[in-house]
Every structure is written in structure tokens, then in C-alpha cells.
Image (cartoon, rainbow, N blue to C red; front, side, top):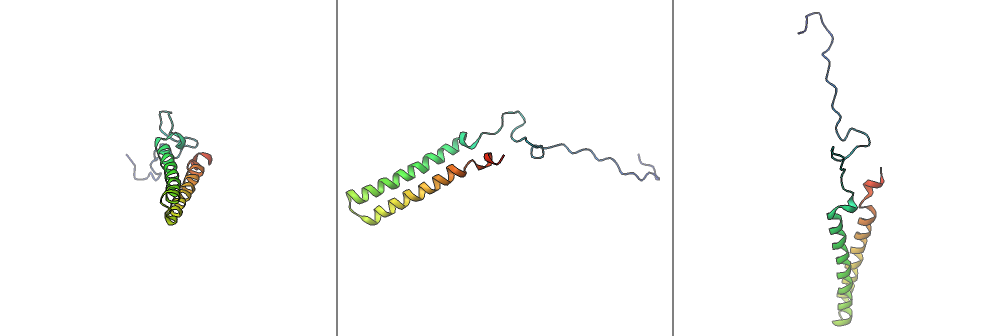
Amino acid sequence: MTLPGDTRPAAAPEPVPTRASRPGKSGPADGTGRQKPRRDPLYFVVIVLLCADVLFGLGLAVFAEEVISFRPMAVMGVGLAALGFGILAYFVLFGSGSDRKR
């Protein structure tokens, strides 16, 4: 109950710290922590698919050049392999960049 002459504000409850506001703490409260990207199954799936893309591109290039002697398809296969390798290199180098920032 507030008296008419009482001008002090009501005390606000202290905010409860959340996971994001606690320094040095991230992940679930049970202490298990989140998986690092290198241990995440999806990370391995992406790596395997990108490696398969590179191998498919190289195989297409060799097949097109040696078996059917069709140079444009061989160039396309080399391009596919180069593009897949570039994406793979970027993903491996910068895929776990959030762990390195800490």
C-alpha cells in the first residue's frame, strides 16, 4: 500500500540473467554444451557431399575427354570440380570460425 505522501518508486525486481547475458557461458544449462561444428553430423554430410562433387567433376572430365572425346563436357567437369573444391575449402576453413573467435 502506498501512502499519498510517499514519492519513492516501487523497487523493480532484479533481472534474471539469461544464457546470452552471462559472460563465458553458452549452450544448455545442464553443462553438456553444444557440439562443435566439426562433430556435428550435418558438417560431415556437407563435407562428404562436396568431396563427392569434386570426384564427380573430375570423373566427368576424364570420361568426356578419354571415352567420348567431347572437350566442352570435359571443361565443364573440370569447372564443376574446381567450384566444388573452392566451396569445400571455404567451408572447411571458415565453417568453424565461431569457435576460433572465443
